[in-house]
Length: 292
Image 1: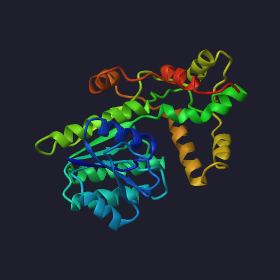
Image 2: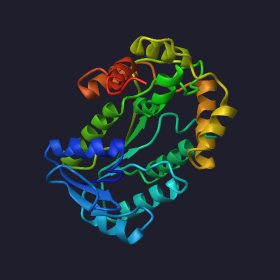
Image 3: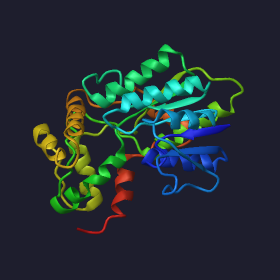
């Protein structure tokens, strides 16, 4: 079975490509520029863009399974729905889609409700797919380096309800396992949804305390001022994206981002090991940082 991986040069997509290649799978990695992309030996770089229908039609005709990952972009829904439609046209019966935890509940958050729209298509057409719903990525916090080291502040306003963050390596491992299980099955497997969270529910104060221990210095939490956060982020990304993040954090403040009871046990069974903890992630990351 040949597996097409979209988002192949990104964080999770890259891990999925490497994980599949390590298992001996025939991997086709979708990229806008195959000449610049670097993949493991044996991986086929495929030129394509999810906004370009002819390139996607050609890419999907060459494979038997699809890992569908969309970046958070303004036309994310168009890209995903078009790609799924072309996958149906190509007769692909083995799909893994990367959605997000609480996609069905956070209807006021654009990139959450957009992913749920894609899930609705998968459900309506009863596509043989695994829908992965990961929580907020631990690795997102790597961008907080300067705030932590220079200002002693954990800059993400996570709030006081709590978020069960997931490590991208766990997400990729489950994606690889799901793809291989479907690819190796004699017949298409039933549709399923898997929630992916970390083992701990952490508030902003909890995260500041972890970083205080890891860095050996006092760290304050990110507070709850979403007006200030949106204004800052609008200076480094498009305003629509900054507002999207603000709306997401607003839901964190109101509802948190929590897994179902027993989620860690389910994930341990899928992974073959306990989900990675935020403290371990922070300790590992801090070792790569030069002192401020």
